Image (spheres, rainbow over the protein chains, first blue to last red):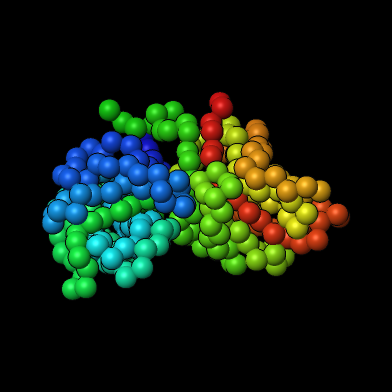
Length: 144
Length: 143
C-alpha cells in the first residue's frame, strides 16, 4: 500500500553537520573544541559563506533549530529553504559560548518535496568583527 | 514508484540535546564525561516527561537509550502515544555514564507519526529520586 507524506516523512529530522555537506562555500572546517557534541563546523569568516543540506519536508509547519557557538567575530545566520530566507539567528556575543540553541519557527511548507536547507552568513551584528558561523547540530521538527 | 512501508528507514536516531516537541522539567546539562559531551536531565520530580515525534513504520522495533545511571535515577516508562511499551531502570548503586539499555520486540501495527515519550513515573526502591538523564535515542527495526 502506497504511503502518504504524513506517514512516510519524518516529523523530527536530525542533521549531523560534521559530515560533508551537499554544498558549501567557505564552510568546511570541523573543529573539536566545542563542549556539546564534541565539535562544530566552522565557516571561514568570509561574508556569504554558506552551507547546504538536502532534506525532504512534508507540507506543513516546521521549525528549524540550530545548536551553535556564539563569539565576538560571529555573524548572523540566515536560514533559507531553496534560497528563500525563513528567519535569522544572531550568533554574535562579546563572550564565547557553545551549545546555544535557537529556533526559527512557523515555517510554512506548501508542498511535499526536497528542499535545500542553507545557512548563509550574509550579515553581522554591528559589534561583530566578522561573519563567522560555527554550528554543532541542526534539527527540523514538524509541528503541524 | 510508490513508497511502501518496507522502503522506509529501519534505523532512526533522535538527538535529545535539541529542543523536544514537548517536555516537563527536562533541561540540557553540559557534561564532558558523557557521550555527546552533554545530557538532557529531568528535575527529579515524579512524572517528569519528554517527548519526540517520529514516523515509525509498521514492524518490530528495538528502542535503545543511552543514559547515565546512578543512585538518584528513576525508572523510564517508554511510551508510544501514551501507551507504555516497556521500562528501563536508571538506578545503580554507583554512577556510570553512557550506559545503553534496550527494549526489544516492540510491535508497531501501522505506519505513522508516533509521539515517543519517556515518563519518570516510578523508581527503584533503593533510589532517592526520579531523575532521568539521557544522551541519545535510537530505534531499530528488526522485522
